[in-house]
Image (cartoon, rainbow, N blue to C red; front, side, top):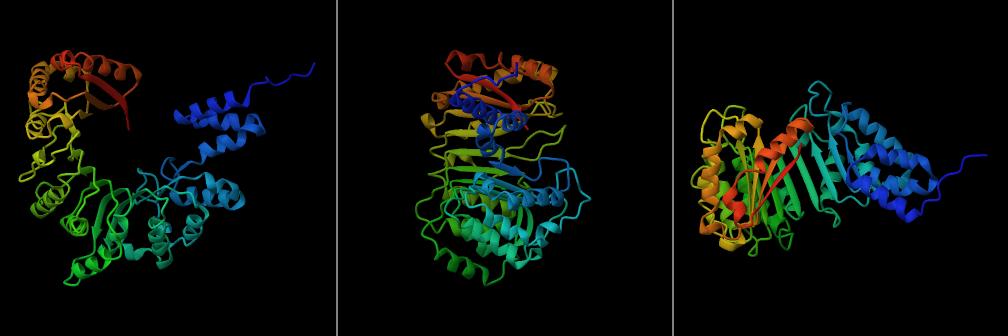
Length: 407
């Protein structure tokens, strides 16, 4: 007797497919797509939802060519693509030719192929090219993409000489991430160019702004554009790897924070951290007490640092919080984490617990620890140790959560 397939209701199979997608289990999705024609479309919808040219250890140009050929042959797949992350090559490859990403004019066609894009990221890993290195057609295609109503997330990394006037377009996007983006040298005409650009939009729409290694020039332009809006829309500000020795950048960031003082509800401060050095708090005159509606704070703690106590930078930062009952979430990112060091700093845990017991944190609902998992067994041990800390906070009903999925 010939074998027959199980008669499984399609609704049940679709639930299984959606669950596999939620778990990022691409292998299961591929297997299910080969099982039956009835499952192909739903599997492909998830498989092509996010295209990341940096998620495999192959040169970006080769990865791109495969993607372009597939979409050109199977245009029905184009409508499934919601997120596109383009890299010159994968992050560990410093030898590949990055120029293909500034010269390959078929990129313009690719962007036209994808009408449903909501997220776009452009990252260079092997070089820091100038914006003028891009062919004009590619520059135009990227800016036209940024103007699409459907696009809500835009990220740009490691590009120099970016025109200040183009930032007027980027700040209309809901989620904007700029990593080591250097604006063109500001001339005497630059403020006028920015003002002329500001007049072309009704109001900046950026709600989440992430700045990695921002320069004083970039911060100046952003502040100039955003401060033209009477009603700030910014709710989340993330600052990564600001050069604390750059006084001008610090002052420009402080001015930007003042502009968003009444709208920002989440602040993330992530300084550069080495194995033996502690994370430092924002340099003076920055003071997060200006955030009257602050609900969440994200900070880094290095348990492997030679400088003790480990919460020496975090506790003074917590003492600046003045948002009262608005504040409900503290996020602590743990770097260079070793179980033995978690146990060794019991006195430090007590100091943090006492700080969180102050009346300023009566509205605190959860403390979330983020950690990179170094194998299942170590991850479970770290979680067990963290679950036993902050007893006073627990007694007040504060949830202590551990997220070991950080990558």
